[in-house]
Amino acid sequence: MTVRETLSELGIWTSGELTLEPGTTMASPSWWGADSERYSARAEVADSGAGSAAYVKVMEPHARDYIDVAATFSAATAAGDAGIGPTVFFSDAASGVLVMEDFTGRCSTATLDLFDEDANVEKLVALRASVHRLSGITRRASVFEDLARVRGLVERVGGALPADFDWMLRTLGPAEARIESAGVDAVPCHGDGNVSNVLMLEDGGMRLVDWDVAALMDPLQDIGALLAEIRPFDTDAREVFEMMWGSFDSALFDRARIYGIADSLRWALIGSYADAMRPGTHEYSKFSDWQFLRARAGLRDPHFDDRVRNI
Image 1 (cartoon, rainbow, N blue to C red):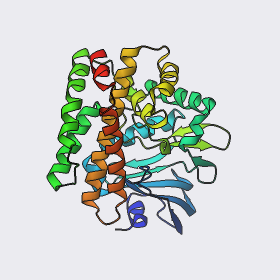
Image 2: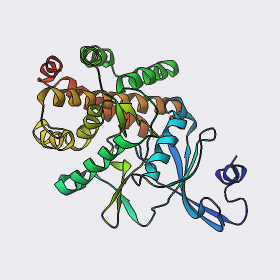
Image 3: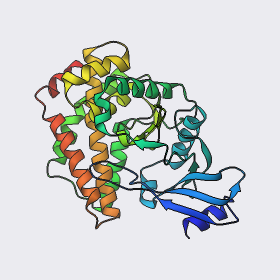
């Protein structure tokens, strides 16, 4: 069934011409739309809910194995209602269809260099902090739980894993145990540090998109994921951590950094699984290799053992 037919069957834009302009997909080095097909839709006859212009996202079949689509769409809807993300006009978890406000032509996708400017970092920090107030995020999961789930998927389909993968898990294990022992105060978080999830609006505002890993989680996990993306080195990361947490605490900073390593390992496994399910492009495998490299660098950092002891 085509996307046009699916939309019509769901009762959206059932009459008149509909133009669907495909969006860009890029899995390496950035996970940009790799879990879904995306279209900028323009309808001849306006729909009562979606109007005549909207952005259509259709989840890929393989993505539903590691994404709770219903929870993702619920989070996206809550974010849209709060002005944190695009307004959602329609969602259907069963078909994987999400129809939302279209910012095409009115925004750009964020890139890492934009966050060399403190003003942009401050805006992003405030936007991510506002997620903590959302009530539509209901999934409860830590990065370690997600990691274990995706590892099972990779092993089931025979996905490619590096020779030192077991060493990575063994090295990360004591950190996971200490974090679990210490306990967490979970709050709603976006959870994905990839800056391609940030829309930069023409008026200077920002919106967050792609709520696939959003969950009730340790806020330090959300911080760690962002720091791994925009501030990979401790000397630069400390200032942003203090901005996000409100004060600096070395034990909490180390905990966030460990979360960042685990997050890289999770995305590496997702890339490996996607490559096994959709072989041929090498984009997913390159993304996976890059994320394994990031995780490996963090685990081999001379200060890693000190981080674990400091939790």
